[in-house]
Length: 292
Image (cartoon, one colour):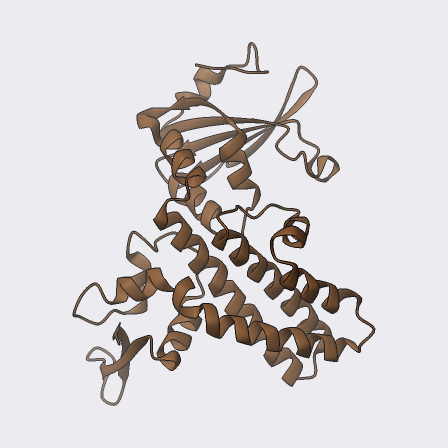
């Protein structure tokens, strides 16, 4: 069992915690922003079950500030394919595996580095759902005269669009995403510049980017939602949203599922079926989704 830069630290005790699966040590986990977190080491303790108390602890070891963070398998995989913790992919690819029951972390690292088809599709779907939600919210803000809120949401849209473009190129979005975009996709980078530095009014800048986002959403919908479309088509019986979110390929993902289903129905990619909701009384129809 490796103990790089943690000589004398009781790694075995952590590995023996109840339901512990794997341990990952990341030296200098916040190298891109050393002043933002103030930590020198991160120990990720991956568990089989949901994590309750003591999720995060801070320790001092030989003048090093150490964070121990407990996370379930499902939460870790959700971080990797979503945007809630963009440092997680860096941690997994650059950290040292200290303990790994059944080779779980090694397999996950391999799938991440090789961009397994499922992880790629999950990442595209997750980022696209946020992209669409941000676009719709910015459009509503502009309609309501809330220009500053529209600006905030359309800026977030560009971040999600940038993530999609990087995944399409087989790259992992980094925290310094705009440095990546300057090289990978100058078109999206130019929109970012137009939004943040143009001499046009704020409302005009937001409107310009919203038009570009709308065009991109229409073009990317079927490819980014391929996993969801294929899943819906995998059985003859129509799906409820809850059934979809319980499917192993979607479970744990942070998705704006209602928004995606609405858009896919309008685009003709899937069908919406209304059936009587027997448990809710006369006149109430339950909406389900099936293949187009």
